[in-house]
Length: 315
Image (cartoon, rainbow, N blue to C red; front, side):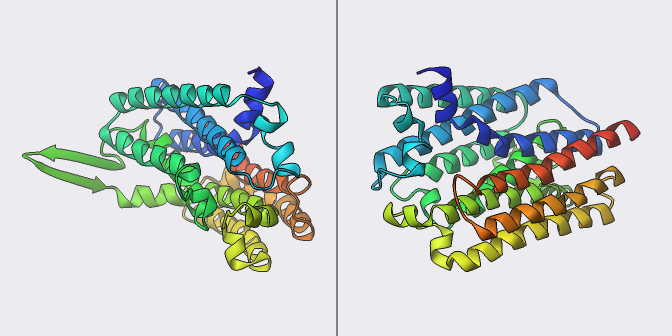
């Protein structure tokens, strides 16, 4: 398998969905807590990237195996296995290698931090696999938007902050005299949830836009996603509301002084985001307008990262 085919198989361009919350959490931990651990940063980066690529490859492989409709953009051009005529053996080999790397670096991260990382890692890995694998994958149910948004938007950001802090700063797991105690810093966890909200919502909307574009194909392939349950009109309305909720969240973070004033310009991304939403409302096409969901996600969240950076020096 060539490099070009590999990058297409793992859809390397979509890795921004996991890397952006990771980088946002990294910049935020520097701003709010003034802490940073290079070793933990690199371990999580490699584990996260490998696992994200593995789950995408699994999804493409299962779509290839289960496809009932074998024509159209989503099948002939989007799936690297079909486009590049890849052998099943080479695809499965890539998946296994990526999973081994993800687990290996994840274990090293756990050994360098705390059992909390191990527990969240196991849960995240399980959800990631079940998202595309099993008798009823999560991606084929009306829960895909919630699961993808929560785990990729919030959990990734939470871990990207947690790995830099002392044990007990956010969550503390204590086992003593056969008693297991789990303590939470509710205030700081709530802060991280609010900070992660635009990423949470943006990733959910990427999934929602994808499912809206694929409604006809999903019906034929028996993928009963959220738009098929609520209908196209309500799904499009939800698509709009999610973005505006993200901007209300950013405004709240500014009012509460959780985000610095340097991030105020991020609010002005609402104008290109609104234009992109209008384009998507007029036409829902995987080829032509689906990318606006990715653009909106990056516009909102990358702007937060960039405008947080000056605050690091001011602080």
